[in-house]
Image (cartoon, rainbow, N blue to C red; front, top):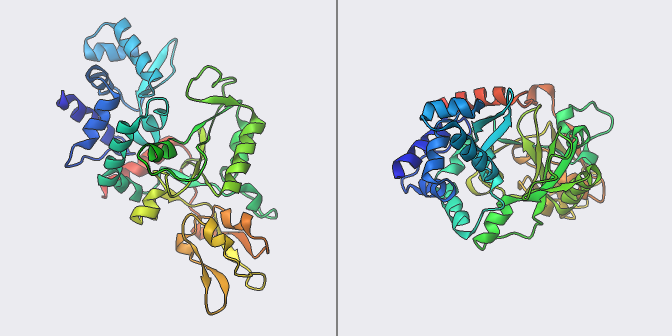
Length: 355
């Protein structure tokens, strides 16, 4: 039985996102918690490219209807992904993160949360060091200077406005930390999802369907709460926006706990200080999730460590004196995210071969 989970772990590690092996074998326990042996065996036949149930059944020498039923049930459990193919559903393997882990809100319990924590600390955090990162920061929109042209991928409202349906669900990272007794003060229900399909979330249990106005309001509230907007590190095909904190987020913890500065992609901005306006109040220090700001004792003003600045704008939105502002980086310093997921995978796969 353990062999089938090893095979699935190997298949998942073959995805550019990664699923590294551990000495303890905790990743196999994690998979066994989610997949039955039969489901794990079937998942091993999937790839990132969608396949019909007929094609999958032929590979496994199983009855097509039974295969279809199992694949559909696995999709409902959030273990694999389904999409409309030619005349029928097509199924494909999902990464661990970002992938089937984030779809376990309805199933996560203390045992699963502890297994995840052990796996994250022993091995998975190492995936945070690779570029391109799985996530990138989007600045708080009201902090973006009005007099400059901004790429659409830098505005969270672009994704919300262009969608046809919207939903919200609890942040699984904060749920996971709470279940192991390490919960933080931040609110949970603020992970946004959106779709080009109208009413896409009206019949889902784990996602609460909301209006466009509610989605925009959640973004505003998250910024007020001091949460970092982040999303998939591509320009096209984005379907979610997370509102993250370094105390719970599996991505941002790579920075806070393991010093992996590549854990999240940076925005096209960094913060600048007008020394003549700074009152050294210290509010920005508390707001910064990345410890990029400090009070310069000699001058009694705020100073910025640009190496640790990700351009989220949280400090700017809280600066009462107007001393802080976002400044667009010079063109040579801007790293546009990959355009498509396919491009991201190619670059990520190349980075893994160089590990």
